[in-house]
Structure formats: structure tokens, C-alpha cells
Image (cartoon, rainbow, N blue to C red; front, side):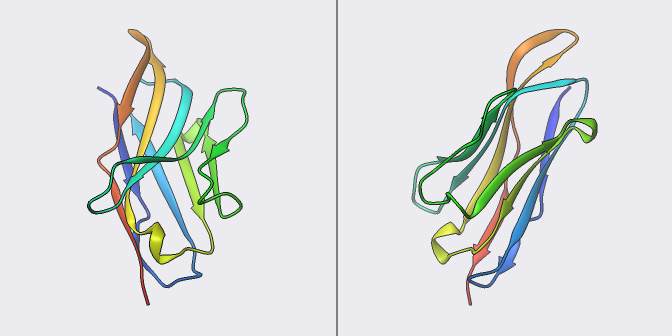
Length: 120
């Protein structure tokens, strides 16, 4: 069974940085699509950053130049480096992966989320 577990959230002051991690466990051996979403209280979930295997990364306009998505395939982990954080970045952040296991190809998986709070 594939599970995704996010970590790295917390309270940070405006202008600070955090790095979120999303570790995959189970038989998944290839990531085809990797994304980070976020959902602020009272708002819809929105796509923050995404990248497909062999492709370039895309970012929401609100985070361009501040956030960077990356992956370490050997560790089966994806990351979201967040710099110059703003109060409006406060949200629960979720990782999303489309990947392959020996028994299934192209299934998608969600993490349970990690809370990021940007406040002074």
C-alpha cells in the first residue's frame, strides 16, 4: 500500500523559509507527476507547484520566484522549498503523486497534509 507523508510545516515569520518534504512508502517505484497543493481556511484547494517526469516545473503566479519543487527519486521523496514566505501562504499543504507500482500504473496518491502558518 502506497502512503505519502508530509513533514516540515510549522510556524514561520514573514520573510522566512521552510522546506516541506513528502516521503512515499510502499511499492511505488516511479513518480510520473508530482504536485503540491494548498488549502487555506475557507478557500478551495489550489495547485501551488507541479512537475511531470522529464518536464519542467510550473508554479502558481502567487509563488513564482519564491517556491521550488524538487524530487529525490532514490529517497522516494519530493520537496517544496518555500522562501520569502508571506501571511497569505498560510495553509495546509498537500503532496500529490501519480506513480507506478509493480501492480498498477498511473494511480494517484495524496498525503494528509502539513500546516504552514506565516505570522509575526
